[in-house]
Structures are given as structure tokens and as C-alpha cells.
Image 1 (cartoon, helix red, strand yellow):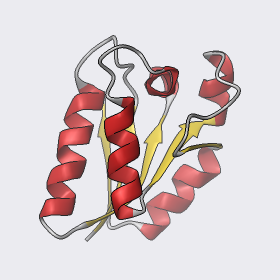
Image 2 (cartoon, rainbow, N blue to C red; image 1 turned 45 degrees about the vertical axis):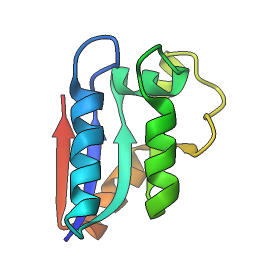
Image 3 (cartoon, one colour; image 1 turned 90 degrees about the vertical axis):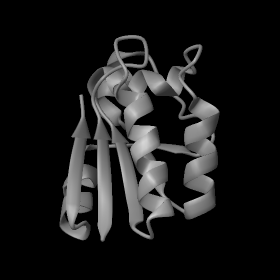
Length: 110
């Protein structure tokens, strides 16, 4: 199955980014495909490299399986992110909609 994950909670506000990362790893190990991870709202703060946010773990996972890591453009602007970290892309909600069409499941981590 093809999956898209959406992370809407910031790394300093809860465990959602960490749960999403563990789930993504489990998907890959189970033979499923992870198309994209879309970081929305406070979730884009993963791109600010908060301490303990495991930014490098996301980058390593995405590189190893060719998954896209997307920071929502409107949310990134709100949080002052003008340049995406290595391995990430800044894109709009249309990318999330496209992911929904290309995936069998879209899961939200909030």
C-alpha cells in the first residue's frame, strides 16, 4: 500500500512527530511505500531543527526510501521558515491533495 503522512503538531508540543517517524519506519519495514510526509501548521517547526526533533532521522529515512518531506508553504511562512532544510521541500496544500490522490491511505499525526 502507498501512504502519505501528515504531521500537524510541533516537535515541542507533543509526541506526534516522533510517533509519525516510528510509524514511517514500521511502514517501510513491512514492505509498504511511503510517498510523502506533509508537515502542516506547527508541524513545520520540525524544519527549524528543534532540539530532539530528530530532523536528521527524517532526512535519513526519506533519503533511504525516496519519500518526499514537504513543509506547508503557508505554515512555513507563518513560522519564519524561508529556506527548507536539506531533504525537505516547501510546497502548498495542492501537494497534499495530490498525495491523497496518489496514496491508498493518508494518516494524520496530531
